[in-house]
Length: 194
Image (tube, rainbow, N blue to C red; front, side, top):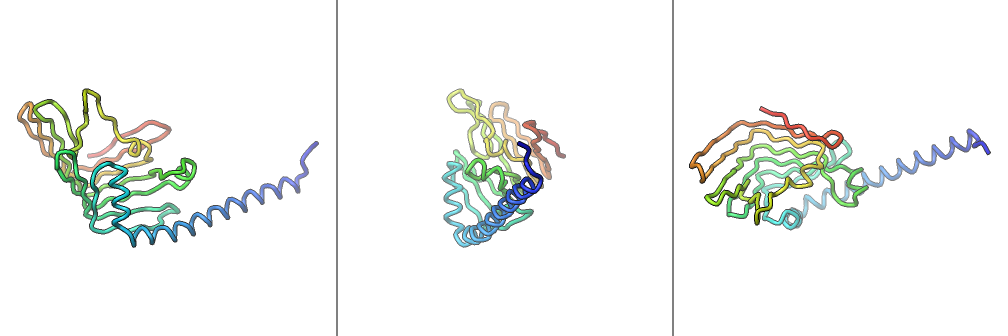
């Protein structure tokens, strides 16, 4: 039995209306949730610290909606490493993907921007590498890049300083004013920068 054009038009209109109502409800929820985040920065930092398994702090935390997505801005953030190394970041922007977060029923990163980080990379006398005080190899097992970084559509690093110290060779290398971008397209990652 063929579907009448007027019935098909009504169904399409109903689906469109439901989609718009869902989008509007999500935007209202964001405008309620984001001010709460700004009003409770200690709770937010504790949740981030618990998720990463290491202490994270910041001077200011701002939350806003940009391009229909929630965005968190942390200034003067610090991350404590396993060996006591503290990594400082002038500005950290985290954007969430509403659609991917809704489908996964947990926050999903859309973009990450890090400005003004001084990153320490070291190899100790035992040959273990660490980045920002976080050991990359434990019990002979290599560490992986964090899943949350790999699923981000884009990550950007600007005005970075990287210090590499190798206790095995006794050499040290220092890089400054580094800019890099990591982009994901269809499961592949591309790193560009200067």
